[in-house]
Length: 430
Image (cartoon, rainbow, N blue to C red; front, top):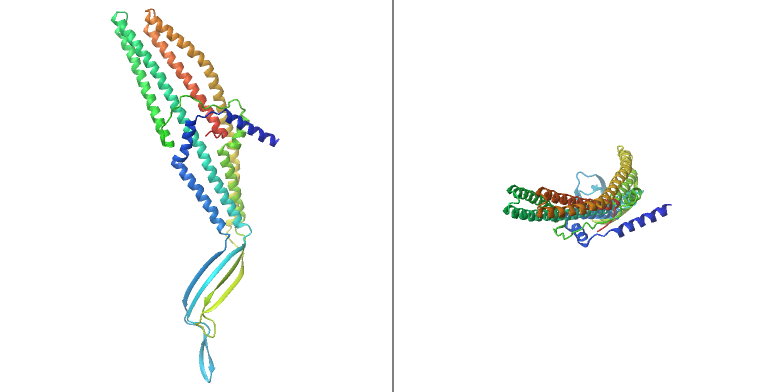
């Protein structure tokens, strides 16, 4: 059963990727952000720091060698008198001036798993740092794509606004002609001009929002290029929520980081349990010292070697408390997994609902687009023939604008919903 589940998830991922048609420009902007955005320099440096920590802890397994030289003056020193050739002679058992040079080496022969546990913990920290880069790449990719399609939405909204303005200007020209022939009132011309001014202000607001999005794109990617014209981010929206959650658990970097947290907590617990264990240290040294009889001031070669067993007796209960803390942290991380599953399932269901809703709305709104376009043509024809009023024509134009903007909004929302589903399931679309 487990094997079948794995195969299904693989097939789901493949079908999801094959359905995805990300345009090359967006893909290039996303990858460009990974090298341009300063945050990634910091994250990559964190990976390097974690790698250096692993090397540092591994180095504690290596022998330690040092060279020393010293001088010490002692006074008083022990001495005694002995009769020599009928006279008392004072003999010292140690010199006043003590000189030494030595080369010492030590090696931890046994540490009962302490170093290994610390190395394993450091490696888990390194894996977390690496996966954290992937997590931030996924978040940045989503942000770049969101900005990219926001710009396309605003460009299309501006284009709709331009068409409305052009239509109103043409309508104004027709009305001015009618005014000259006495078939229209000055009020009609002023009313159309007021509507044009309102449309121009709306266009300015849209262009202002567009400029802000370009600034955000520049901030993240270092480039403000966006030649896209379509909401071309597509995806599979008919998948079951439970299957999408299973894909997220396997592919989403957020779940990967959670798994890393659990692994870190387990490694930290193992390291805590190894704290306070005994160690066996092998040591040796060689060098030259004075103080050997009969000539106490003469330098003589010496050497030493030995094994030391260190057994901690009392550490103030720190080991037991550290173990308890590590166990609590592990339980906390495991509980977080349940909350994360619940949150992701909620968000996946919402994304699927948004996809289905916007798809259905697009089908319905297309009928409205055809209807209002036809109504606009009829109103314009009636107005030019003198059988219609300016109010009818303005209302027809407003209806077209509203329906076109509604259609555009549904397309944009569908694109964002598909993008959100891709983010949740961990799809690598860049």
